[in-house]
Amino acid sequence: MSFIYFGTNYNCFFYEYYMYIKYFLVNTNIKNLDSLLIGGFKAMVSLCIKTNKKNIIDCLIKNITSIHLDDIVFTKRNFSKYSNVIVHYLGANIPEFYNELSSVITNCIIENYEQIIVHKLLLLNYFYFDNDDFDIIETNCQDILLGRSNLNISSIENDIIDRKHYLWADVLRYLSYNKSIILDGFITFRIADYIKCVDSIVDFSVNQFVINREYTEFINMLKLYINSKIPESELVHLVYVNEESILLDKNKNIISLTKNNLDKCYLSDISFSSNDYALNSLLTLLPKKIIIHLIGPMDDFINTLQTIFGDNVTLCTDCNICEFYKALNKQHGS
Image 1 (cartoon, helix red, strand yellow):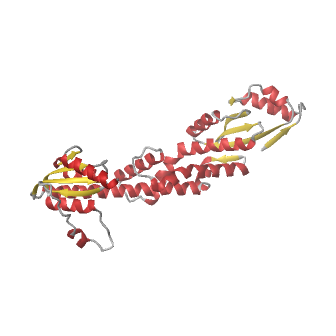
Image 2 (cartoon, helix red, strand yellow; image 1 turned 45 degrees about the horizontal axis):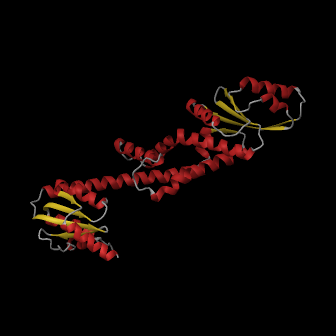
Image 3 (cartoon, one colour; image 1 turned 135 degrees about the horizontal axis):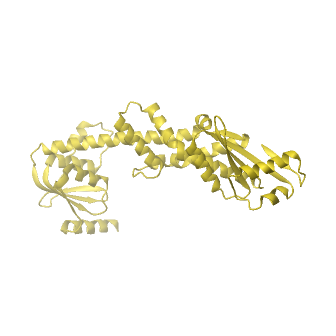
Protein backbone atom coordinates (compact mmCIF):
# COMPACT_ATOMS: atom_id res chain seq x y z
CA MET A 1 0.00 0.00 0.00
CA SER A 2 1.33 3.47 -0.86
CA PHE A 3 0.78 6.65 1.20
CA ILE A 4 1.20 10.17 -0.15
CA TYR A 5 1.87 13.14 2.13
CA PHE A 6 1.78 16.82 1.25
CA GLY A 7 4.05 19.50 2.65
CA THR A 8 3.80 20.21 6.39
CA ASN A 9 0.08 19.53 6.80
CA TYR A 10 0.16 17.65 10.10
CA ASN A 11 -3.25 16.03 10.15
CA CYS A 12 -4.01 13.26 12.63
CA PHE A 13 -3.04 10.35 10.36
CA PHE A 14 0.27 11.94 9.40
CA TYR A 15 1.16 12.44 13.06
CA GLU A 16 0.29 8.82 13.94
CA TYR A 17 2.48 7.59 11.10
CA TYR A 18 5.31 9.86 12.27
CA MET A 19 5.13 8.49 15.84
CA TYR A 20 4.81 4.92 14.54
CA ILE A 21 8.08 5.21 12.68
CA LYS A 22 9.79 6.88 15.62
CA TYR A 23 8.63 4.21 18.08
CA PHE A 24 8.84 0.99 16.09
CA LEU A 25 12.01 1.76 14.14
CA VAL A 26 14.23 -1.32 14.08
CA ASN A 27 16.79 -0.14 11.58
CA THR A 28 17.18 2.78 9.24
CA ASN A 29 19.76 4.36 6.96
CA ILE A 30 17.96 7.72 7.16
CA LYS A 31 20.08 10.23 9.06
CA ASN A 32 17.43 12.91 9.52
CA LEU A 33 13.95 11.43 9.79
CA ASP A 34 12.30 14.79 10.62
CA SER A 35 13.59 16.50 7.49
CA LEU A 36 12.55 13.53 5.35
CA LEU A 37 8.94 13.63 6.58
CA ILE A 38 8.55 17.37 6.57
CA GLY A 39 10.47 18.26 3.44
CA GLY A 40 7.70 18.29 0.86
CA PHE A 41 5.97 15.72 -1.34
CA LYS A 42 6.87 12.15 -0.33
CA ALA A 43 5.57 8.74 -1.37
CA MET A 44 6.00 5.59 0.72
CA VAL A 45 5.97 1.99 -0.52
CA SER A 46 5.24 -0.61 2.17
CA LEU A 47 5.61 -4.38 1.95
CA CYS A 48 4.89 -7.02 4.58
CA ILE A 49 6.68 -10.39 4.79
CA LYS A 50 4.88 -12.96 6.94
CA THR A 51 6.42 -16.04 8.54
CA ASN A 52 6.29 -17.94 11.83
CA LYS A 53 9.91 -19.09 11.78
CA LYS A 54 12.44 -17.21 13.89
CA ASN A 55 15.42 -18.17 11.70
CA ILE A 56 13.63 -16.69 8.69
CA ILE A 57 12.95 -13.45 10.57
CA ASP A 58 16.61 -13.21 11.58
CA CYS A 59 17.73 -13.87 7.99
CA LEU A 60 15.36 -11.25 6.59
CA ILE A 61 16.44 -8.59 9.07
CA LYS A 62 20.11 -9.32 8.44
CA ASN A 63 19.74 -9.10 4.66
CA ILE A 64 17.45 -6.06 4.66
CA THR A 65 20.10 -4.25 6.70
CA SER A 66 22.59 -4.82 3.87
CA ILE A 67 20.42 -3.24 1.14
CA HIS A 68 22.38 -0.41 -0.46
CA LEU A 69 19.54 2.10 -0.59
CA ASP A 70 18.80 5.07 1.61
CA ASP A 71 15.35 5.91 2.97
CA ILE A 72 14.49 2.34 4.05
CA VAL A 73 12.76 1.72 7.37
CA PHE A 74 11.64 -1.70 8.60
CA THR A 75 9.88 -3.01 11.67
CA LYS A 76 9.07 -6.43 13.14
CA ARG A 77 5.61 -6.99 14.61
CA ASN A 78 4.49 -10.22 16.30
CA PHE A 79 0.89 -11.40 15.87
CA SER A 80 -0.93 -14.57 16.92
CA LYS A 81 -0.16 -16.55 13.77
CA TYR A 82 2.72 -14.78 12.02
CA SER A 83 5.56 -12.45 12.72
CA ASN A 84 5.56 -9.64 10.19
CA VAL A 85 8.61 -7.88 8.83
CA ILE A 86 7.21 -4.62 7.46
CA VAL A 87 9.48 -2.72 5.09
CA HIS A 88 8.87 0.95 4.20
CA TYR A 89 10.68 2.75 1.40
CA LEU A 90 10.45 6.52 1.11
CA GLY A 91 12.93 7.06 -1.70
CA ALA A 92 12.46 7.76 -5.39
CA ASN A 93 14.09 4.64 -6.90
CA ILE A 94 11.15 2.29 -6.42
CA PRO A 95 12.14 -0.27 -9.14
CA GLU A 96 15.55 -0.72 -7.52
CA PHE A 97 13.88 -1.14 -4.12
CA TYR A 98 11.73 -3.96 -5.51
CA ASN A 99 14.82 -5.56 -7.08
CA GLU A 100 16.77 -5.39 -3.83
CA LEU A 101 13.95 -6.69 -1.68
CA SER A 102 13.36 -9.54 -4.15
CA SER A 103 17.03 -10.46 -3.82
CA VAL A 104 16.72 -10.44 -0.03
CA ILE A 105 13.74 -12.82 -0.09
CA THR A 106 15.37 -15.00 -2.77
CA ASN A 107 18.56 -15.43 -0.75
CA CYS A 108 16.53 -16.12 2.36
CA ILE A 109 14.55 -18.88 0.63
CA ILE A 110 17.67 -20.53 -0.80
CA GLU A 111 19.49 -20.33 2.52
CA ASN A 112 16.65 -21.64 4.69
CA TYR A 113 14.30 -23.64 2.44
CA GLU A 114 16.38 -25.21 -0.33
CA GLN A 115 17.62 -28.12 1.77
CA ILE A 116 14.04 -28.84 2.85
CA ILE A 117 12.86 -28.73 -0.77
CA VAL A 118 15.60 -31.16 -1.83
CA HIS A 119 14.63 -33.54 0.97
CA LYS A 120 10.95 -33.46 -0.03
CA LEU A 121 11.76 -34.07 -3.71
CA LEU A 122 13.88 -37.08 -2.77
CA LEU A 123 11.12 -38.47 -0.55
CA LEU A 124 8.58 -37.96 -3.33
CA ASN A 125 10.53 -39.49 -6.22
CA TYR A 126 13.22 -41.72 -4.67
CA PHE A 127 11.63 -43.08 -1.50
CA TYR A 128 12.86 -46.60 -2.35
CA PHE A 129 16.51 -45.93 -1.45
CA ASP A 130 17.57 -47.11 1.99
CA ASN A 131 18.52 -44.55 4.63
CA ASP A 132 22.27 -44.67 4.02
CA ASP A 133 21.95 -44.26 0.26
CA PHE A 134 19.33 -41.54 0.74
CA ASP A 135 21.67 -39.57 3.01
CA ILE A 136 24.56 -39.86 0.55
CA ILE A 137 22.42 -38.64 -2.35
CA GLU A 138 21.05 -35.75 -0.29
CA THR A 139 24.57 -34.72 0.74
CA ASN A 140 25.81 -34.92 -2.86
CA CYS A 141 22.90 -32.76 -4.00
CA GLN A 142 23.63 -30.15 -1.34
CA ASP A 143 27.31 -30.12 -2.35
CA ILE A 144 26.30 -29.42 -5.96
CA LEU A 145 23.96 -26.60 -4.95
CA LEU A 146 26.61 -25.05 -2.69
CA GLY A 147 29.38 -25.35 -5.31
CA ARG A 148 31.38 -27.92 -3.31
CA SER A 149 31.02 -30.92 -5.62
CA ASN A 150 33.91 -32.54 -7.51
CA LEU A 151 31.53 -34.09 -10.05
CA ASN A 152 31.36 -33.03 -13.68
CA ILE A 153 28.23 -30.87 -13.50
CA SER A 154 28.34 -29.40 -17.00
CA SER A 155 25.02 -31.05 -17.95
CA ILE A 156 23.15 -29.26 -15.13
CA GLU A 157 25.21 -26.09 -14.92
CA ASN A 158 22.38 -24.04 -16.43
CA ASP A 159 19.91 -25.37 -13.86
CA ILE A 160 22.29 -24.47 -11.02
CA ILE A 161 22.64 -20.92 -12.31
CA ASP A 162 19.07 -20.42 -13.53
CA ARG A 163 17.36 -21.63 -10.35
CA LYS A 164 18.23 -18.44 -8.50
CA HIS A 165 17.19 -16.25 -11.42
CA TYR A 166 13.83 -18.02 -11.74
CA LEU A 167 13.20 -17.69 -8.02
CA TRP A 168 14.14 -14.02 -8.00
CA ALA A 169 11.85 -13.35 -10.99
CA ASP A 170 8.93 -15.12 -9.26
CA VAL A 171 9.47 -13.09 -6.09
CA LEU A 172 9.70 -9.81 -8.01
CA ARG A 173 6.57 -10.60 -10.01
CA TYR A 174 4.64 -11.40 -6.83
CA LEU A 175 5.79 -8.28 -4.98
CA SER A 176 4.86 -6.14 -7.97
CA TYR A 177 1.19 -7.10 -7.58
CA ASN A 178 0.93 -7.77 -3.83
CA LYS A 179 1.81 -5.79 -0.73
CA SER A 180 2.25 -8.78 1.57
CA ILE A 181 3.79 -12.23 1.11
CA ILE A 182 3.35 -15.35 3.25
CA LEU A 183 6.62 -17.15 2.64
CA ASP A 184 5.46 -20.74 3.24
CA GLY A 185 2.48 -20.32 0.94
CA PHE A 186 4.55 -18.58 -1.70
CA ILE A 187 7.11 -21.42 -1.68
CA THR A 188 4.38 -24.04 -1.91
CA PHE A 189 2.47 -22.55 -4.84
CA ARG A 190 4.47 -19.86 -6.66
CA ILE A 191 7.96 -21.13 -7.57
CA ALA A 192 7.37 -23.86 -10.16
CA ASP A 193 10.32 -22.91 -12.40
CA TYR A 194 12.70 -22.91 -9.46
CA ILE A 195 11.40 -26.30 -8.28
CA LYS A 196 11.89 -27.69 -11.79
CA CYS A 197 15.56 -26.66 -11.75
CA VAL A 198 16.15 -28.14 -8.30
CA ASP A 199 14.36 -31.33 -9.37
CA SER A 200 16.77 -31.68 -12.32
CA ILE A 201 19.70 -31.30 -9.94
CA VAL A 202 18.21 -33.95 -7.64
CA ASP A 203 17.77 -36.33 -10.62
CA PHE A 204 21.39 -35.74 -11.62
CA SER A 205 22.58 -36.50 -8.07
CA VAL A 206 20.63 -39.76 -8.05
CA ASN A 207 21.99 -40.79 -11.46
CA GLN A 208 25.55 -40.03 -10.39
CA PHE A 209 25.09 -42.04 -7.22
CA VAL A 210 23.82 -45.06 -9.17
CA ILE A 211 26.65 -44.79 -11.72
CA ASN A 212 29.29 -44.52 -8.98
CA ARG A 213 27.83 -47.46 -7.10
CA GLU A 214 27.78 -49.63 -10.22
CA TYR A 215 31.32 -48.52 -11.05
CA THR A 216 32.50 -49.50 -7.57
CA GLU A 217 30.78 -52.88 -7.84
CA PHE A 218 32.37 -53.44 -11.25
CA ILE A 219 35.85 -52.55 -9.96
CA ASN A 220 35.45 -54.84 -6.95
CA MET A 221 34.35 -57.68 -9.23
CA LEU A 222 37.43 -57.23 -11.42
CA LYS A 223 39.72 -57.17 -8.39
CA LEU A 224 38.21 -60.43 -7.14
CA TYR A 225 38.71 -61.94 -10.58
CA ILE A 226 42.37 -60.86 -10.70
CA ASN A 227 43.10 -62.17 -7.21
CA SER A 228 41.57 -65.55 -8.08
CA LYS A 229 43.76 -66.11 -11.16
CA ILE A 230 47.39 -67.05 -11.71
CA PRO A 231 49.36 -64.35 -13.62
CA GLU A 232 49.95 -65.23 -17.27
CA SER A 233 52.96 -62.92 -17.81
CA GLU A 234 55.72 -61.23 -15.86
CA LEU A 235 55.63 -57.68 -17.22
CA VAL A 236 53.55 -55.50 -19.52
CA HIS A 237 54.36 -51.90 -20.49
CA LEU A 238 51.41 -49.62 -21.17
CA VAL A 239 52.29 -46.46 -23.08
CA TYR A 240 49.61 -43.82 -22.56
CA VAL A 241 49.74 -41.05 -25.14
CA ASN A 242 46.96 -38.73 -26.33
CA GLU A 243 44.41 -40.72 -24.26
CA GLU A 244 45.25 -43.87 -26.23
CA SER A 245 46.90 -47.06 -24.97
CA ILE A 246 49.75 -49.08 -26.49
CA LEU A 247 50.81 -52.36 -24.87
CA LEU A 248 54.38 -53.68 -25.00
CA ASP A 249 55.76 -56.97 -23.70
CA LYS A 250 58.89 -57.26 -21.55
CA ASN A 251 60.99 -57.16 -24.74
CA LYS A 252 59.26 -53.93 -25.77
CA ASN A 253 57.40 -55.55 -28.64
CA ILE A 254 53.88 -54.29 -29.36
CA ILE A 255 51.14 -56.56 -28.06
CA SER A 256 48.04 -56.85 -30.21
CA LEU A 257 45.02 -55.70 -28.25
CA THR A 258 42.46 -58.40 -27.49
CA LYS A 259 39.17 -57.50 -29.16
CA ASN A 260 37.32 -60.73 -29.74
CA ASN A 261 35.76 -61.08 -26.30
CA LEU A 262 34.34 -57.58 -26.32
CA ASP A 263 33.07 -57.82 -29.88
CA LYS A 264 31.22 -61.06 -29.10
CA CYS A 265 29.62 -59.81 -25.90
CA TYR A 266 28.13 -56.59 -27.19
CA LEU A 267 25.97 -55.41 -30.06
CA SER A 268 27.77 -54.44 -33.25
CA ASP A 269 26.74 -50.79 -33.03
CA ILE A 270 28.69 -50.25 -29.77
CA SER A 271 32.16 -48.86 -30.40
CA PHE A 272 35.15 -49.35 -28.10
CA SER A 273 38.30 -47.28 -27.67
CA SER A 274 41.86 -48.54 -27.51
CA ASN A 275 41.63 -48.14 -23.73
CA ASP A 276 38.71 -50.59 -23.56
CA TYR A 277 40.68 -53.11 -25.59
CA ALA A 278 43.82 -52.45 -23.52
CA LEU A 279 41.95 -53.20 -20.28
CA ASN A 280 40.48 -56.33 -21.83
CA SER A 281 43.98 -57.45 -22.87
CA LEU A 282 45.43 -56.78 -19.41
CA LEU A 283 42.64 -58.85 -17.84
CA THR A 284 43.55 -61.66 -20.23
CA LEU A 285 47.32 -61.45 -19.69
CA LEU A 286 47.09 -60.77 -15.93
CA PRO A 287 50.71 -59.54 -15.66
CA LYS A 288 52.52 -59.54 -12.32
CA LYS A 289 53.70 -56.02 -13.03
CA ILE A 290 52.33 -53.20 -15.19
CA ILE A 291 54.48 -50.16 -15.93
CA ILE A 292 52.44 -47.25 -17.20
CA HIS A 293 54.48 -44.77 -19.24
CA LEU A 294 52.70 -41.43 -19.11
CA ILE A 295 53.29 -39.29 -22.21
CA GLY A 296 50.82 -36.73 -20.92
CA PRO A 297 48.56 -36.08 -17.92
CA MET A 298 46.81 -38.74 -15.88
CA ASP A 299 43.07 -39.19 -16.30
CA ASP A 300 40.21 -41.42 -15.18
CA PHE A 301 41.44 -44.41 -17.19
CA ILE A 302 44.83 -44.43 -15.47
CA ASN A 303 43.15 -44.04 -12.08
CA THR A 304 40.89 -46.98 -12.93
CA LEU A 305 43.88 -49.17 -13.81
CA GLN A 306 45.53 -48.27 -10.51
CA THR A 307 42.34 -49.12 -8.65
CA ILE A 308 41.92 -52.49 -10.40
CA PHE A 309 45.52 -53.72 -10.38
CA GLY A 310 46.62 -52.00 -7.20
CA ASP A 311 50.27 -52.52 -6.22
CA ASN A 312 51.00 -54.24 -9.54
CA VAL A 313 50.95 -50.82 -11.24
CA THR A 314 53.99 -48.51 -11.44
CA LEU A 315 53.93 -45.08 -13.06
CA CYS A 316 56.84 -43.87 -15.17
CA THR A 317 57.46 -40.53 -16.89
CA ASP A 318 61.20 -40.57 -17.61
CA CYS A 319 62.77 -43.67 -19.16
CA ASN A 320 63.92 -44.82 -22.59
CA ILE A 321 60.39 -45.85 -23.55
CA CYS A 322 58.95 -42.56 -22.34
CA GLU A 323 61.56 -40.51 -24.19
CA PHE A 324 61.04 -42.48 -27.41
CA TYR A 325 57.26 -42.01 -27.44
CA LYS A 326 57.55 -38.36 -26.38
CA ALA A 327 59.81 -37.71 -29.37
CA LEU A 328 57.51 -39.71 -31.65
CA ASN A 329 54.45 -37.84 -30.42
CA LYS A 330 56.21 -34.50 -30.87
CA GLN A 331 57.22 -35.45 -34.40
CA HIS A 332 53.66 -36.43 -35.32
CA GLY A 333 52.34 -33.30 -33.66
CA SER A 334 54.55 -31.06 -35.76
